[in-house]
Image 1 (cartoon, rainbow, N blue to C red):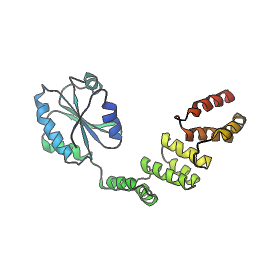
Image 2: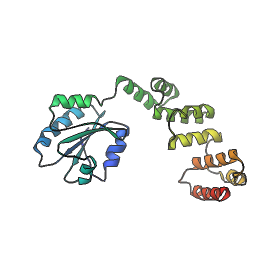
Image 3: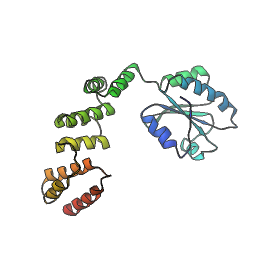
Image 4: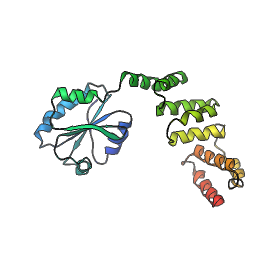
Length: 235
C-alpha cells in the first residue's frame, strides 16, 4: 500500500480515524532534510511489506506547520506510531532498516488479533461468538452480534452483551431496538403522540419515547420536532 501524503486538512480522517482500524506510522519530513531522504524509502519498504496491516502517512512540515507544532517537533525526521487515535511510539533521526523493522513489527497485530479480525469480518453469529471468546470486549464484535440478536428478537441478550463496553452511537441504537421490542418502521407518529401525555410522570413511557427517536435517527425530519415536544412536556 503506497504512503499517504497528509495535510492539516486531511490529518483527522487519514490518520486519527484510520488509526482506529489499522496502526498508522506518521513520517514528518521536509524536502531540504537529507536524513529524511534516507529514512523515507526505508519506512516505505518496511511498511509496504506489511500488506496493509500498517499504514504510512507522510507529513511535509514546511507545508503543514500546524501539525509540526501539534507534535512538538524539534528536529526531523520525526516518526510517530498511532493506534486507536493516540500516539503509542515514536523516534527521531534516520534509523537503520533493522531498527525501523523492529519499530514496525511491534505495531503488527498478533496471531490472535488476526484471528479475531477474520471472525468479525465473517459476521455470522457463530464467528462473532468465537471472536468474543478470544476478546470479550471487542467493540465491533459486540456491536455486530448485538444487531444480530435484536434482529432475531433476542433483545434482553443484546442488552446484556452491549453492557460490556462504553456506550456509543451504535450501542444506543441496539439498546433502543432491544427495549422497543420491534423492528423500526416508517410510521411512529401514533405511538409517539400517545406517549407524550405520559412522559413526565411515567419513566417507562419516557424511555420508550426516547428509544423510538433513537431508532428514527437524526435524519428523520420528525425527530427534532418530537425532541422539542418532549422537552416542553418535561420542563
